[in-house]
Length: 261
Ligand code: PEP
Image (cartoon, rainbow, N blue to C red; front, side, top):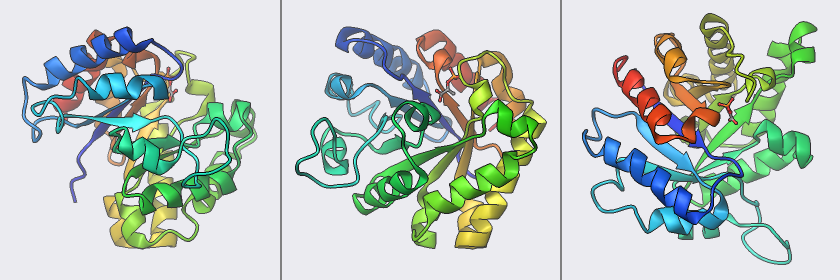
């Protein structure tokens, strides 16, 4: 089965509305030179306060070409959860995807596997798609715990989710030591871990879901690294942080991905 690649830009806590609009337009104008079939699925994830600004720029031509994601959400639909945003609100703002379980949220906001599982279920129930992040620390890698750690993160995140919903979901393997450090994980090793994740998905949700689910690599992806990454058997795209903050580098990642499609 051929899986359509995804190139997703995680803008993290960057940019005010004007900058977000300008960056979105830089990505959208470039995407508009191609058809949906030629492009990978392009997703950008602005901060909550810039989603509406970006949405206001999504014309009928670029809407199918560039999708938007929230960087987080809460699993409850509404209520006394000061500072939180529900799936319905994210959907109402126009998003198609929600990034969950990013290592920065696990590390700085104490997000647990159980919370990530609740978020994944709420996102799918609400008709959006989760981009579920997982990844090991350098200490875990050096102690030979990478596979066991990732396996337990994936099993916990997908617990109780139907095979049909797992098939639609997206996983991003992001070794924590590669995020924002400039140190990209060797493409063959990233592919090995991603193939291992696909086997875990097969175990919990069956072969069809494992074949369909898109599993991305994230961690210092650059225009110069993406082709080798995309030429691996199991890497279905990239979650890009730093290099998604400039239209030129993000568009070059998209161009180099298209060369591999
Ligand atoms: C990320 O934050 O998801 C990420 C992969 O960042 P960077 O590309 O900057 O390493």
